[in-house]
Image 1 (cartoon, rainbow, N blue to C red):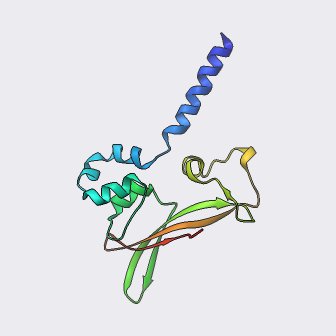
Image 2: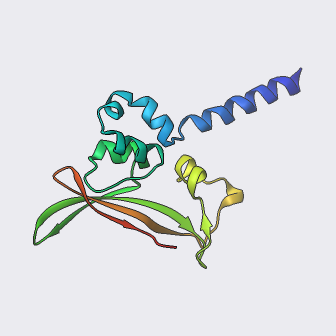
Length: 141
């Protein structure tokens, strides 16, 4: 009986860990009204986890999720907002904590996945001007 209770508790903890994870599909379900207002071409890109020029911040959030960092950029043309999406990598450039793991547990690494030589790398930077995407910088591999 104790092992059954222990197993049930472990499964409940595991299920709770997955609740915080998001994919384009789960983000769409949570904000279906906003998704339905978008043009079909944008809806298709969002389902694929992709973005394009002219997307608003809600569309980018649906496609990519919350950014890891938000920056303000000022240049000769004015001020813009930059959303940064990151991945972690080893000192030699091998991916660590990416995709599912990175999005779900990015700041609470279990001890067995700790890598003291890890570094953060910007994978995508999305620049908004007046609430619309005006630039997309992606890591090319």
